[in-house]
Amino acid sequence: MSENKNNIAKLSLPNGNSYELPIHSGTIGPDVIEIKKLYSDSDHFTYDPGFTSTGSCKSDITYIDGDKGVLLHRGYRIEDLADNCDYLEVAYLLLNGELPNKLQKSAFDNKITTHTMVHEQLALFFRGFRRDAHAMAVMCGVVGALSAFYHDSTDITDPSQRLVASHRLVAKVPTIAAMAYKFSLGQPFIYPRNDLTYSENFLHMMFSVPAEEYKIDPVLAKAMDKILILHADHEQNASTSTVRLAGSSGANPFACISAGIASLWGPSHGGANEAVIHMLNNIQKTGNVHEYVKKAKDPNDPFRLMGFGHRVYKNYDPRATVMKKTADEVLKAVGKENEPMFKLARELEKIALEDEYFISKKLYPNVDFYSGVILQAMGFPSSIFTVLFAVARTVGWVAQWNEMIEDPEQRIGRPRQLYTGSSERDFINIQNRI
Ligand code: SDX
Image (cartoon, rainbow, N blue to C red; front, side, top):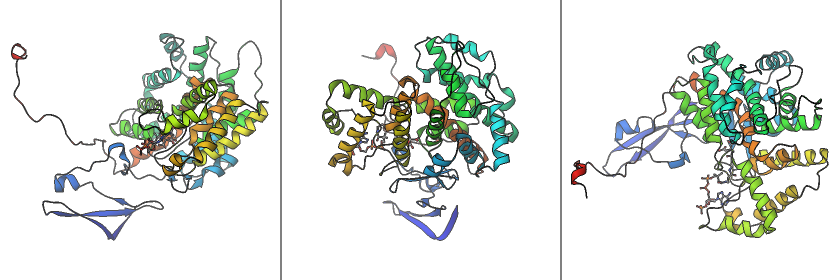
């Protein structure tokens, strides 16, 4: 971050005071106006509900240009990473800042692979849940419970412990996700295998049963890699900001990632992929796609077109483009190229993109619009879709959490407010209250 001496913003207040605020430039993207001292100097807070115009930190990890629909991870285009890497290659990039060479890649693969098993007693945790518990509820609980098992990697001031915790989280979250799915089915947990790649292992733990050999379809394994890559990190979104805020208090990494899972669960965020499928099912039942588009446009109707719109992208989400292409490949591979749900999704997209409401508000399909169609075709139930998002995003959360801890500028996050409640008033005993 460079402070440009000529770059000073001037703020004048009605009381006649004025303030000079430094402007900083990053590598690319908007400059920032530093307001760290504004309150102490002016006794004023800034006000930005939803943080639409607020930069919470500086970061080297991910850059988004919402107007151009560009997404870079450590400078590399998401399209190039999705087409040429496997998930652990991108995970290495997010965590270390550079793409790995062959030796680094194989050492990293081995490091993650040898952490995929969980403590055997963790399996007992699942018994406390109802079989029909939402898998994200199970994920919040069990991932948070890792803090109770891995005490040797909870001291966040020790870089070696942070490294072990980072590897454990990337390695164990898929195992726990698969256990949550198996638990919901009443099927036995499937242990990870060290001879499989990350995505192959995940499909194996999700879909194999002891009674017969599970054959991994390479097309599905490749699609799994792509889907995980497309969801791996995305700048300072709600769940990543939650992880950073939890981490800023010094909470242990397992607890912070559990907080991120909780935030991701919301239908406005990672829960949208599940909501898209429910929406498409409802549209299929009523057969009236135009009715739903009309509801989405009605300011008095809380219904929104799930999988559409984005706080940052005011253009096509580049991940949705790759996702749509992957949907074609997967549906062909599983013999569902005429899948009605996919056809309906493409029809809905066409209608929305030609509609003045969506055009004027710059609402385009986001990462969640097509992911559900693929995941359903791959055999995942919609209740697991957001869990898959959490599996993929864990490495992004961990990379951002490490960056936050290593940033000398970072302190405990503690926003202020515009107070609109009662001013001070006298207490009245209950006997005297009407
Ligand atoms: C993710 O932040 C990230 O990076 C998130 C994510 C990641 O990788 O981490 O990209 C993942 O969360 C993707 C988004 C998934 N959510 C959905 O698909 C849910 C549907 N989308 C909306 O809820 C909404 O678009 C949000 C939540 C995504 C963004 O909301 P904003 O930025 O607060 O935008 P807004 O609500 O202020 O909308 C602006 C206008 C509003 O109309 P007006 O009040 O100006 O009249 O657009 C309208 C909204 O009503 N609008 C929609 C709409 N999204 C916004 N109208 C109909 N359907 C929609 N989907």
